[in-house]
Amino acid sequence: MAQRVLITAGASGIGRAMAEAFAASGAQVWITDTDAAALAACPADWRRDQIDASDEAATSDLYARLNADWGGLDALCANAGIAGPTALIEDVALTEFQRCLAVNLEGAFLAAKYGAPMMKRQRSGAIIFTSSTAGLKGFPRRAPYASAKWAIIGLMKTVAMELGPYNIRANAICPGSVEGPRIDGVIEREAASKGVPPETLRKAYEGAYSMRCFVKAEDIAAMALYLASPAAARLSGQAIAVDGHTEIPDPRV
Image (cartoon, rainbow, N blue to C red; front, side, top):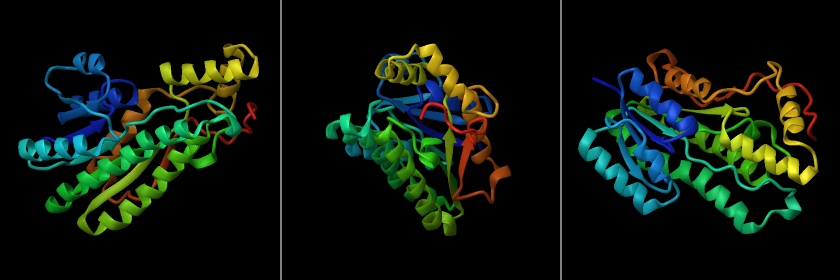
């Protein structure tokens, strides 16, 4: 039987790479996203819904339909997230902080809340949260984002404890800087706030990694595929950095 996989924010970026990887492995793929155009551009055989991950009513309805159509769920990638503001703590509006937590943290909570009962009934499954190295180390000028990503790790470890007796595993992938429009925007905003050229800041970002480069969405997708596979049958409760190693002192601080 083909794996049944749900991926939130699956129409672009990391989520799209995850969906492509699972589809290539033979899995049935169901994605959600807020971007109608990006959803429409995805392969026709993927199931899809335009949903805000922090909308509980829409999430509840999604899982009811998924259960009716698929009868279960083998892997859940709680991937939805936004970058949030790039600013010093005193310049962050409370509404910006709250919105960042709503999408990143509440979205992950709702995905697990409604996915867990389906997996418990079948006594199997894997939940894969997308956190960040910002959730392991903190990140200057990104207080809302770092706060949400730290909290996701706590959520993941708790879910792993609760669901382990049902043979359900939960882990978090912690990407470093991932090539793409999101990190480009972060660099542009931070460079503007510091009065430096974006390319100068990009080189400083890259210099903070041992491998001197950003990771690709496909690197994150490969880890998700592994975590959902039988090869990771006894791997649970872990926050795994996929970042090219960030132990070099950060020159941006």
